[in-house]
Length: 320
Image 1 (spheres, rainbow, N blue to C red):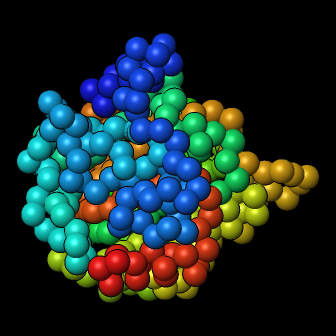
Image 2: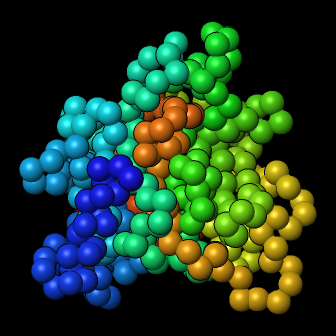
């Protein structure tokens, strides 16, 4: 288990025992103020929120959760150096820097973030048997193609994806996801996608944006992205700067098995964590690194409407 995983497990145990009352963030109440950068319409369903301005006291390699779950994440390999001065929007503070460090070595030194526990992350239980999920945040890509594959000897071999941010499944090895924003090869062409999986061990579905990813995410430019996953109906959506993106599903069958009687929810297991800027947040393997900056990453336990995605984008860009 990673440092962040151990920290969350220990905190949960102490809170349950009454030894460390208040150490984890309490559940958010409807109408509570919540983080100022989050539109009021989203605060009740905000499970986890990271603005990278809240290091854990005494351990700056951990980032505090400003959502209701209190799920701390680890800034893997780079620690406090991964918090950089770069504003994604007016009023923002620091941003997260992720990157590939040494592509010619099959090591574990890439800068990424997240949390992993093989027994499931208890604080992420809102994503256990959930009907819908949303992942959103600000991203600035500093690359024009996937990075060299550090797991092979061929220097010309590239990874087939660029990892942004997502929630792991309840049986994940650090790579498999329930809900993910990323850039991945679709029929030989890199595309911005929402990739989701309803059932642990089941098939994934991908909704790919039609537009060229280099136009949607120009190198060096901050862009707000959102992906929604409706597990009840088997549908997904992508948004850029508050507006829906045209796209297509890569499978035309029923990979989430939602054609039969419902209700259709995700597997009743706690996710094994969150991955940000690449896979394997437990730092056992390098996969799909992102030379990127990220800010205000949000993970919600509902399908956010198109109207509320736009509200959130405008809430941030108008400076509240």
